[in-house]
Image (cartoon, rainbow, N blue to C red):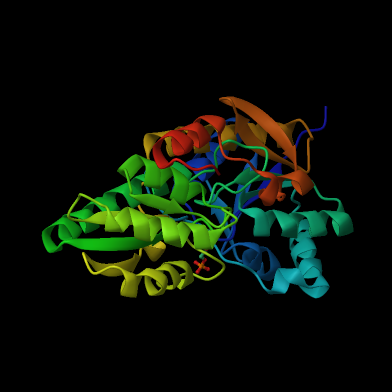
Length: 331
Ligand code: F6P
């Protein structure tokens, strides 16, 4: 029976806590099955430039709790053009690779789709992004850790907000899809949560002003999902309400890249290990062009082209109901 012998691993796009746990599980399982693992550094750029580390059990000892990715990550401009992808393919051939595992988000998977149309090479994707914006999976690696980081950071801001009688508009990451904003906002009991999926933003501003005018607390937090660019959404809302409220001082805060760092939570570690193990098992079984996800706590296989349909990904019905009950509006 033919067996796979060499595989490559890449972490790509925005890093996320738990990527290292996924790498470790892939390397450990490969080792048991006599498969060599090559790690390509800094996302697709490592594949293009042949920037490689041989991964053995020794390399991945004690990395399970490390934030970031030991392989480095990045968004490769060169991989967007044919010449870059050709160089990447040459390195795949030169290193006798039988398959590739990409841990990343929608940008990375879009790259895999194009690469596959040209070279039809076995690739398995693992969703690694704090944004949770991969279609077909309930969770992505790093999302839970980012939510906990947001709670931790916002509660520190809450202390100073309370002491100074202030309203804080806090912008969180997650692109404009709002998974981080919605869940963290509910979990900290924010006065309001603004995500861009809500159609009538003007209504929101009016509503926030009304809520603040009749607010009984001496401070409050409003969570806002980032828009296309970091820093834009919080500032916009701040400018829209600052003149209209005299009861409180208003400040805004952009949590930024703190949300991407830190040691992964238990949930993210276990998720990363499960997805990592399944990815290598799939390559061993000659499967290709799928992203490994999790649905109702069961492993699921998502075709690459479906996984990137992030605008079709819906909020969980239970969370929607909480939002409706607590915030008296629908998402
Ligand atoms: O995709 C993850 C993410 O952290 C988004 O939430 C955010 O919009 C973006 O990456 C930031 O990217 P960069 O680190 O390139 O500024």
